Length: 108
Image 1 (cartoon, rainbow, N blue to C red):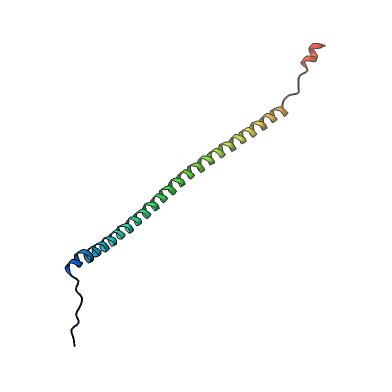
Image 2: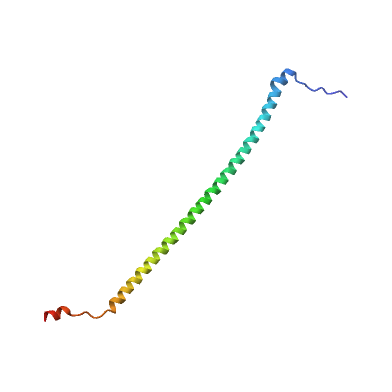
């Protein structure tokens, strides 16, 4: 059997073309890995920010609900007091003594 001869590039070709190409490819892979990690970190930061915003909105909403509830209770209490005062005024009006005819007595 004949021995196979392989092409071996010259040292000049190795230093000017092959090695820079290999180094460039390794650099591209490293850059892609760094970019992927940065994208992951950006996604995580975005998710954390969304959660923080959601928590703030929930807190504000809860405060507003509580405030609205208190305001509604105050209005209801004011209406009840006004209705009770009106009813009390009506009762005193209806149960009062008959009018005195003092003006007619003086005229006579």
